[in-house]
Image 1 (cartoon, helix red, strand yellow):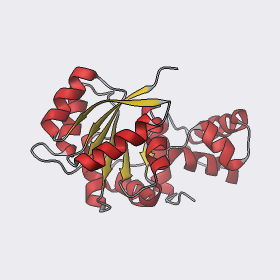
Image 2 (cartoon, rainbow, N blue to C red):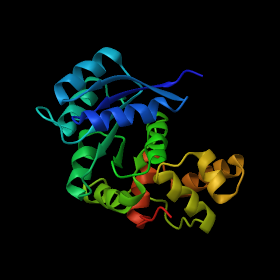
Image 3 (cartoon, helix red, strand yellow):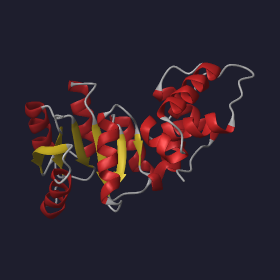
Length: 218
């Protein structure tokens, strides 16, 4: 299995070194480049084309949000995971507007970052558990209204739980383990739910979750 190629952008050398050691200790991923400022990050990412960019928000020169927006403009399907000390919703909105696929706090546990990198690489939206509520509310506040849901559609408790976990960035395998179900059963619940509601994909699911107030990650 080819390891995920990760690019690190953080202006603190000690933090960057710690992140690199953590990521490289996981056999499923490796750091292929790093930068201490936005301009260097943009140049390095464009040259190396990594699978995931871990981007600090606060960097000198071109900040993380602007660098993210520029990278996404150049390549829309590029995966960027925002990493920051800031918990304010304004920062969450800033990164979402820029096109980040996820948001992780620096104070989060090491395995949370690894999980987030895998989720973003897999095309999922990752929300730091401690910020999930604020992020979903931000999605609603941005004017990204929940998709039109089919009249009379009602989900079972299990269907709702599966959709909520999908919105929080969990994979089918992780949901199966969390709910003590088979992966096939989770896939069935997901398929049944999106068909009932008329949802088209993960973005619709996240917006629907925001509209429902499914903000808890526990």
